[in-house]
Image (cartoon, rainbow, N blue to C red):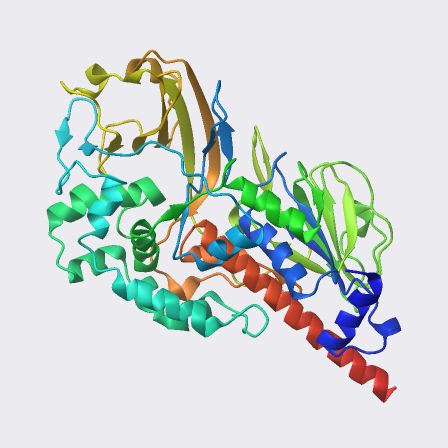
Length: 512
């Protein structure tokens, strides 16, 4: 888009004051977090008004993706996902993005044919309360086949429809408002255990199937809310999709399409803001000369930013590098995990302004372990036959992991296995496998919050009139689609608020 066309877009779309009063960019935006919610915010802002926003994305890790990543298996071209394995046809925004970006679907993977429940060393095996030999995704297909997912499908479809399109829809201003669309709150306000009990599940089905599955996805029992539980079952009942090269490629494509300024390996240490009525808080410490009404972000590089116009934020990185002049900040990371992670611990972001009342959520950490070997060793797993393709574990297991799954058959004849666990497994892998050739561990320190129904304590999706917080939606569920919904909504909120500001400025301009 040419500069002339961009300005014409601003004049027509926003009904802005004369061009000199609405010069581009309309806002300078700092996005903290380079995962699905941060990249979606940037992407949809650019779709709402191409070239209207100057977006800088700060990502603490060297690579983007957040809690979605991949490893390339040795001696192969296989990019194995290490978080966010797939999305489904009922994830409407991701399906749209798949064709918009575009994303090539990865049809690879090992067909799961057998699944059983292992109680751990010395405790033996329990057959799943369904036929253990199924053609595809045995554990989820089994549960989805006996749970009525039609109600959640209807509610979810209504939620998308009632919220409307990107250009003609209305952003939601709270998690509760989002849940009210399509009456998703009928599910999110009760536990998954309550829903299954209402549908006639007996206790064996709950304990030996539903709980192990909930653990494998969310590392939680059925105390999680019914929306989180039922949405996963709905996804399992529909075709799955993933990106060639790993699902973090979707994040890279979103950022590229948005044309952002990316600052990878840059953790944010502090966010400062000065309004028009008070001195710049922390000015001496940050070394910033930002004017009133601005935000400043400080990074970890000990570099100082330049002076900034009024009405912006300054951010400080973990090396005390200050970036100022931001009109808007988007916290695209759980506030509980936003900050600087080091070998010695975690330091949260320091905010120079008071945050609204927040109930901090308890997050679960997650170890994703890949191993390449000949086979799982039956002697370790205490079975006379082959170890099942999928090994689930009950709530009180003595097994050192939550789930084990066979993911890939390699050209060499070896297999690639994936574990989800709450602790490292390095010292156990030689016992678990025959012919172990390679292993890799990825740690996600804050993967899932406690998802028990708690609507009275949903976090706000704004932390300040100009600080947007799409990850508040994680109080209901954690998934790639949820992150995209949150990021898309943040973009709509920002665009709405900028249009309202321009209208006020136009009115003030006329009256003067």
